[in-house]
Image (cartoon, rainbow, N blue to C red):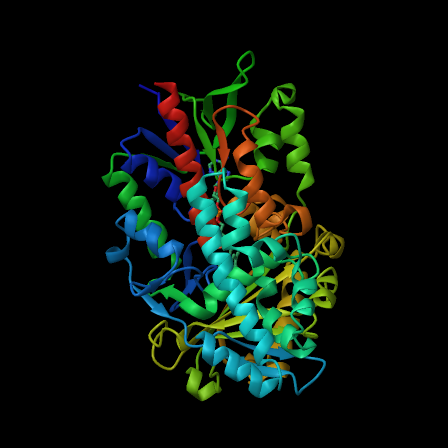
Length: 512
Ligand SMILES: Cc1cc2nc3c(=O)[nH]c(=O)nc-3n(C[C@H](O)[C@H](O)[C@H](O)COP(=O)(O)OP(=O)(O)OC[C@H]3O[C@@H](n4cnc5c(N)ncnc54)[C@H](O)[C@@H]3O)c2cc1C
């Protein structure tokens, strides 16, 4: 009775898609989620008359039927497309530097529009910008080929068809942008999205960053009209409709390992129930699995620990959610996403984020993509920032949590007002603040990180994808989500769930 083909731990984006793929493939799947709702970070919440999006600013790699990305294809394959309504985000971004008033740029979607706008802001940037987007296209094609080759690419094909992909693959962002002679100012503007991946341009793999920007600019970004919670609920409903089982409000306390075979043999839930299975996909991080779900640490292969310890935790989340009692027009908020940094140099900014008083931020005005996101005459704004290292712990005492939250929130709001010249403080009707403690509590992410492991240097997306075929340290145990092979973000976590499910389907075939 208590036996499943696969148990999926956690109903975040990765766990939901993994479960749906398995259920649709006719497998007996159990999804266990410690909360009473699906989604993990991908959720919404209400305060007063406002319904806030908890995390999503914009979806990457989606697009439209006529020009779409991998995420669109995945949702189509899983029959999700017609069940969720999406709209385009109006512009790529507005980026503002606090240290130089003149550094204030609004960039549009569409490759030609983007290149033209950059040329207006930075004369003589056109050629290098074009080269950048051509590289983006080649990287996209090469990644498709690598995907089809399933871990066995022909190096001759790679060299012949994708020579520039091979040339840039080993490098981080800075050396490639320098090599294509992009003016420094254009690099700074182009690197605006760095904080979405949480690693600066000197550490971030060029391929990862280039494909991300290419996808954003060419496919535009989308959001669901009913918050990310609607996506999570729709996928959960589909899992059930396709014969899957979901336990909400239950936690996987332990993963049972057969010592002699080094393979999964089941899981134990928080009430002591034992579920038999040979396959587990964990949407919880390797830190959580090796840290507390495998009780006998002798059963964890040394290589698995080495691999997990090789990764560094990414930024720890700090967010504000504001419900304002004035319309965006009355306030004068024209853009959807505001990236506000001390300077436009991502490497300096990354260092600043190790300081608790840093107020760099990404702010979204939801009503600029969804005019009816809140009632007439009101506006929803949400702020996201990252703290690296232990600066948050150092500032926190047992007594000062609420005081610290208030102080930081006020600083972030002041910075926004200073950067945009838009006064918001008198119009705040609702405010909610999420700290690294909130995120650790809500999703069990280690230290309250919101972007999985830092995608930097040898732990960038490309090396992760190359290693993923050889990372079955315990037979039957796979990972998906922000801490897995595709790194964090909505599209990456969904796609990693699909990959983990497909690998598990392959293993299940071998079992029979
Ligand atoms: C404020 C904010 C803004 C963001 N903005 C964007 C954006 O604009 N675009 C973008 O692409 N990404 C964005 N992200 C990142 C994105 O939300 C995450 O990368 C993604 O949601 C991670 O999904 P995941 O699959 O790793 O699952 P998670 O959301 O980490 O969920 C893991 C789930 O596992 C459950 N779980 C853990 N342990 C157990 C256990 N033992 N038993 C049962 N259940 C367990 C947890 O409760 C949780 O539900 C943002 C994140 C935040 C917080």
